[in-house]
Image 1: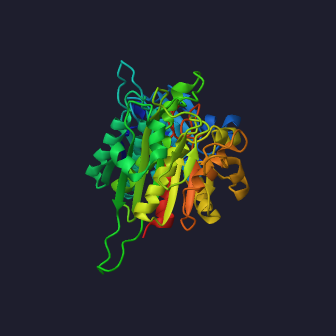
Image 2: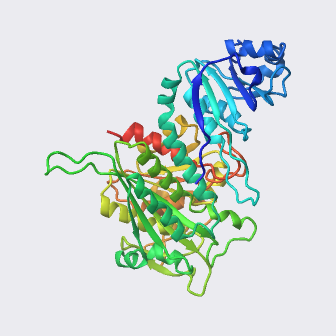
Image 3: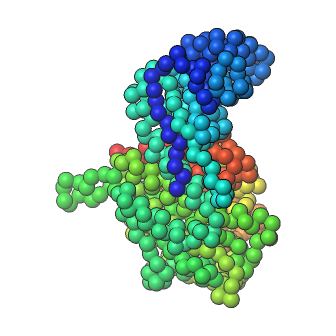
Length: 495
């Protein structure tokens, strides 16, 4: 697992700035008002700070952006970063300011002078998220150096920032899983990593193929029957609420999080084009988000009951593989005509969704999946698609995403789309064709959700592994969804 950069909060001390190596970052308002630290740096650099802030380029910066003065005279630092940030900065802008430093962090570390800025904790969080790297280079890179954040009251800011450590670790856990190649992150390895979270207080159970057969999960098992990697369902329970004192009273029902975990997706017999297939290592992104959220909840000892369930399979072409035209029976009992074996994620989710409801009778269900290319056509890489059987629930998810700076968009889900997935031979077919592909996928899943259960489906195909870097992540896995769901749980589900 990736180790976060070490961040410490220290008292503001400006006397030794000239000798400080690495990078120095200082916050300045968009209007160019210099703080005490900025004035000190301006004197040391013989007016370079004031000249930069007074330039036309400064006025063009957006909140959180930085202007870099390389190898500034009068300082030992290799770079002085002037960051434009108002005193009343939004959470998103404050994290962006930290990411501006984290993006260029190296083994020498950095000094961030926040003084008495009220968003110092969020700035540190943004820096931590952006200072992430994952690779298999034979030449090992040096670890990041320590980041010191100068603030007026370090103990108070450190206490405020403490919950962010659990959230950052959850995001990194998700990113690591998505970034792993499929020859390493097999279904066995994935399940083992989740089982190891038992040490954090999670109750983890792994259901193997024989148990899945006994449960009737023929839809899920059909996806993986052409692979040498065994299909599995992993159940992670976090019971953060005390049991009722009254022995007759029932425990608070959990929120259920369900994730698609296709560790590699060739498309099966309906095989994908070769170009770009290497990115299908990310087709377990939904399961990775569920795992990251469960890790965060355990690390911060969240006062809530949540169960995370992930279906782990590999979709491969083989003499035993599922064929187009096959008809399988789901755990629910509905029969499914397989039109396209590349529409496999919904088959996995159908059985896990039904199992989650039957076993746990949850208060609500959220599933996450890199489900369709159609959602990328609709929304690009800026927003996840949010579908729900309850508009209020969908809006809660969208608002949580916006609060955390993660893009999400409420998509339609009307009964009229059901006709597109009506089968001639079975109860339902697994794809409705090209038109409204993301919507018909959600409509398929809706058939496996009980009408009385609030449910939300989040299609993260466009945001799990975007084509370039994002504000808070380098190119690669973004970890989208961990912050959104943690926010949603804190705001709407915790006691």
